Image 1 (cartoon, rainbow, N blue to C red):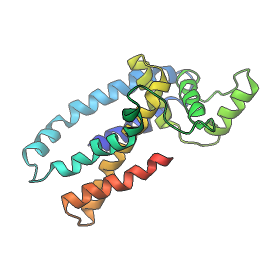
Image 2: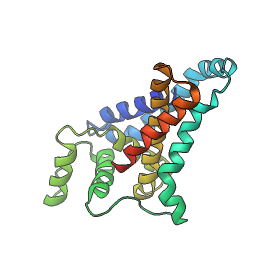
Image 3: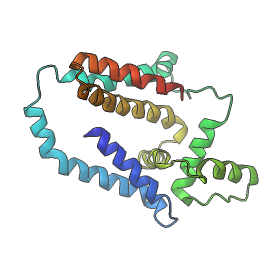
Image 4: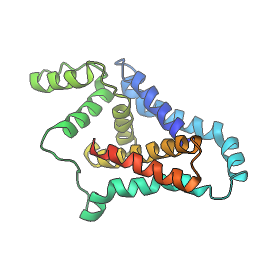
Length: 193
């Protein structure tokens, strides 16, 4: 349920930030959608909880384990920090793009040629921006600067990915423990990206 809800938020934010008048409304729309998802799936979650099989927690454990592995550099630093190589400007461009999408939709002409051209090169040519819009919405709703949410958000994305991969591994017939380990191991290499 969590991966489907997260995917729905990303998909909806892809569309709400496509048009100028709806872009600034994205945080409110996503919060309302998330609340509706919680309310509408409440009975299903209760039923799944009641009928959970023995060892059910293995699949769910893949998410926090993946999160801790992905967040290990920040945890080891013992302070808030920005992860990544910072040799190129990918992180900065993605954060700037997320912020720009939320306030100006896909209008990248900024009056600053290099800035606008770079954003247009990333997001103006079909680069999926739903995840960036969702990140910017979380920043707006929480009042946090995106630079401090960027790594946390990427770690969360990997955690959700681990849940999806556990589900796929279970469908191939792997036992719960093996599926959880497989989901975690398969999700963590995305950290390099």
